[in-house]
Length: 97
Image (cartoon, rainbow, N blue to C red):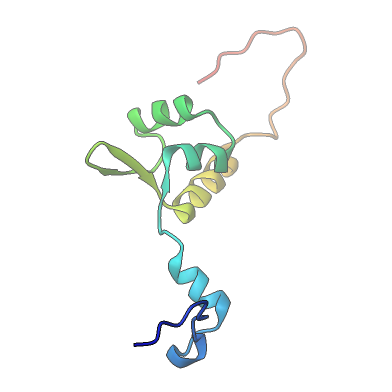
């Protein structure tokens, strides 16, 4: 019996190139810590947003998971809802809704 070492996977045998094979190996979801880093907020703020149902999340038992495309869409919606065109008077207190 011979044992082969350092055998490289043959991507062409199953019709995949290296990039396609790598994409298939990536996970479909991110953990809360990964998602917090991805959108640039703290882990605890992200969990608060999940608790208030203000951000899309998947609950799997005690784990909270996030899809990258859902987070991208959520950030786009947040950006679209932002009213940057409002001009504020200097020195006046305004009510935040």
